[in-house]
Length: 212
Image 1 (tube, rainbow, N blue to C red):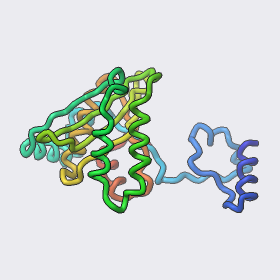
Image 2: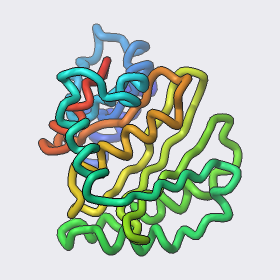
Image 3: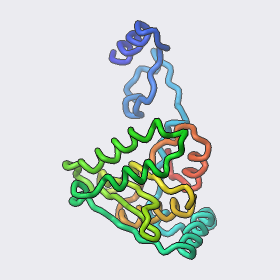
Image 4: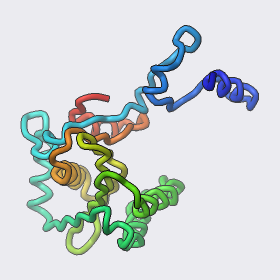
């Protein structure tokens, strides 16, 4: 009934009669005799094995081990982990400045929404899981951040990741591994969708998802 009402509203608003970003659990309750369902590959979440990411063992992770080794040879890196009890006390202006400095001109229109999202993460107070902010420095300069949350015993949600592009994939592999090490004991981490961005899809596929 709700689906039908939303589609009718779309028609009245002069929009295409379709619904997007419908959760899988909701889709299971839709009458397939009345509505056509199509999966959108661009919005598949990537579910990764935390144990595999913590070690990057095996041929399938050769490139990630190479990135990590090259980064450690070239840079003396300091990793700062801030847990949920300290997030509200954190200096978020440093991260806002970092985001502004590493964002390409073409992406400037999205920067304010990113800053808003990261600041909201710092204000979370009622999470039942473990919230973590990872900051990576090299030579005293902030070069990468990520935020994540343990949502239950087995599952972690990766919320946000941004790096200085001059360090490329080497720093991203480092952050992925550090995040996996933080959440040892959990089994899976969801790093969300690729939105159809080819480079992002290639990188997420390289982490060998167990499911989508």
